[in-house]
Image (cartoon, rainbow, N blue to C red; front, side, top):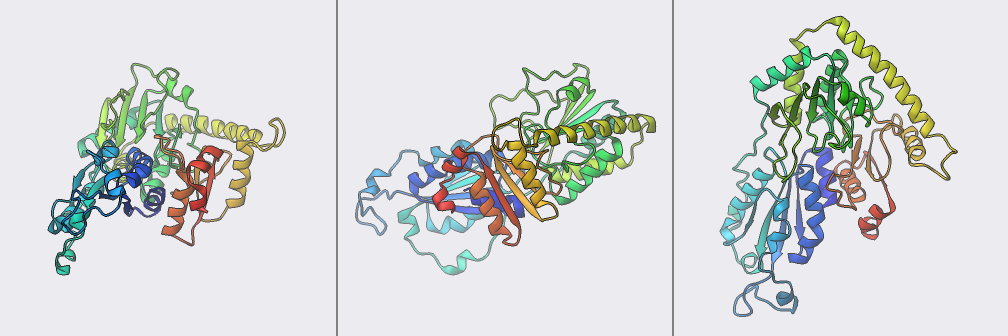
Length: 406
């Protein structure tokens, strides 16, 4: 499950994971929770304990046939899956796999599950029936053009805008376009509890993960695909400030409670929406003096932030090796090397310098431990020539089933 997650992060190609009946599905449930939280498309399948005790090919033959039976096996992962079904007839298999794959890869993306009863798997169908798919294409949506134009107007007219980017900035093209757009307009970007890199850590607009003062002074907050863009008990936003939420599911409808304000809600794949917004911003103009003032403030803040990171990473003060120190050493070692870091309670952005799209990931907010080690393996499987580094706390290491990973 972790390898399938990491493979998708590097390639954008969803994977299929085969699991062993209910016990395998239970072992994979944490990975399904992580995938659902991060909109990772994944086709999960597991066997279904035979229904028949005798008299049919595929019927029960060993005691686990009784011991593994459940009334509702799918319940193990149902809340984490966009779609689920149980194969009823062998001739359904092509259409169901086709449909499952299309749903998993459509906006908002996520895992799906198909249960496979053994008696059905033991039946025969002509091989020619299995080759003519996919017939059902997935869809990727982009933000409503009118809403994109409104967002561009609000950003251009804002005196103190701030962007919270928690799950990256889409693909490589939108990553580059986003970095250019915020630089042109002097917009601070916060990586509060970020799980993917949205902007280079040495970019003048990157203000780190502490954004309390930026939020307090903002008259416009743009939330890019962020499940929890601030801490409601701690961070205060002016009532007069406008809030824009942009993402594949910008109000996060999977979650029963998520009541962050949204004055403008733009639904669509982040890569497509960011490119559309960047194009719209090219047609806007604002006071050059206002932009220069924001850029000057960001330059001063960036210089102080870098000094703070350097101080935190120095030896001494903290006994042994601090997390910041280890992160800086790792960043220095990886400089000019095409690489990705998968951090799970491990390396931290800032002391760890990262500049490229897909160069840094952190554990999903679902916090299903044991994610980073197998995710790095999956990413390396996707591109064997790409250096992948997993950094993790001891608990995360143990939960990853380290013997299997090694």
